[in-house]
Length: 300
Image 1 (cartoon, rainbow, N blue to C red):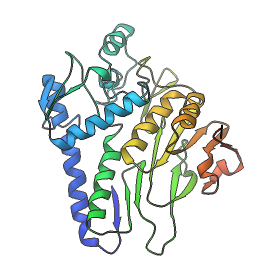
Image 2: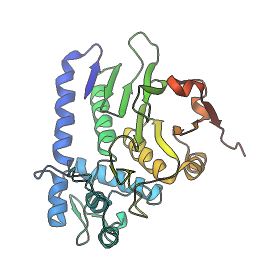
Image 3: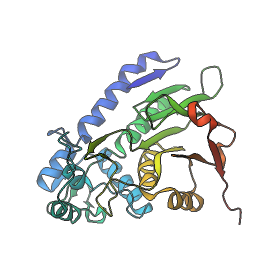
Image 4: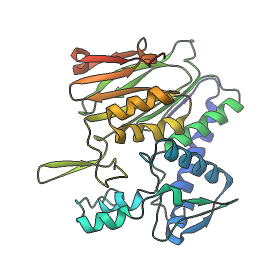
């Protein structure tokens, strides 16, 4: 966690406390969290904040036609990504876990949430974006005009730098050596999902943690990472995962039809950016010599 607040440094501690409180309520691995209780019992009382987050997360699942699905947790667990005991699951185990994946079966009812028998949820694909939104909301209410939050792959900026210039945010290289590029933003979230972030190798194959909810396997479609830039942290967080699962063609079609965001798609041989970033994205390192394609929205 990196948090900078300009002109109101005294709010740093409050921002950190808010983030830690959100983590405690939402962490799937903290047995005392609201989400852990829901997973354990199939039903749980939830605070209004958690219920609001669940509503927004489920709306993103619907919007992406299940490319994002917060109920994929049983499959993620079958691969060992929650415990660190990595393994390629047996086919029968994967079939059983996939049978429990369906965000449409999560029910919310005035302060309570319930799941179908055996289902479990994980908000890891949206929780950091939500936390960033809440911190920025609190800062705005306190009169802050300039702040930057980095939660590891999730960067959110309030306003511009104190001198009025844009923030320059790095997009990490999927190969792990420095940055693939940098983008200049003001008052936006910049959130990246990539298969390089958590993975294991078995029998010469690499398996990463971003699971396709339709197949139960790590998404494999040519994308190395997806970065989404927009106004809403939770939307950018969820969409970066969903677009990674969709693959480049479906993801770009999604952007063209629902483009209230901009995106950077990094592949082995090229980088594709949406047209709103044409003047603000700069490729770096080995990507500086690589082809950068700009995707333009059909004006018709």
